[in-house]
Amino acid sequence: MLTRQDILLINAALQFWAEEMDPEDTQMLKLYAGDPAADQIWTPDEIQRLRIHLAAARLKYAVTNASGTELQTTKVFSTPQAAEQARTETTDLVATLLLPEPAESL
Image (cartoon, rainbow, N blue to C red; front, top):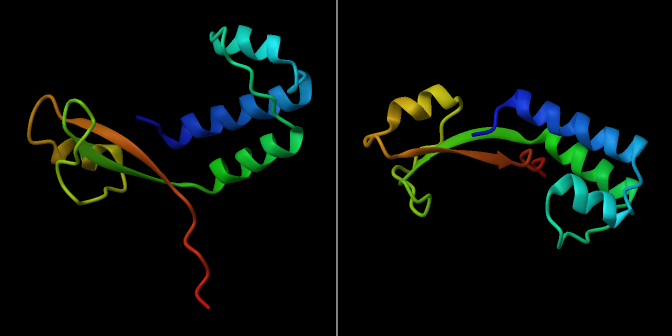
């Protein structure tokens, strides 16, 4: 499960990638992603857009079955600890939800 600290680390890695690596170098992506089939090309603007979305995302947590295919409750939790406490089976998983900021009311 992801935490706010994890998101900060991902954001820092994306910033490093944009500034220090060549985002359009698919060979570097294959090497660092550990995926020989990876051929995604990112522009600095796309990386910045992703960083903005991640930084603004609201982290919430849910409880799923062991395979992660069904929610065990419709409740969404504000902390991983609250979601852990809501598990009813030892095999239940805590999932991370990345929710966008709510749209402004018109």
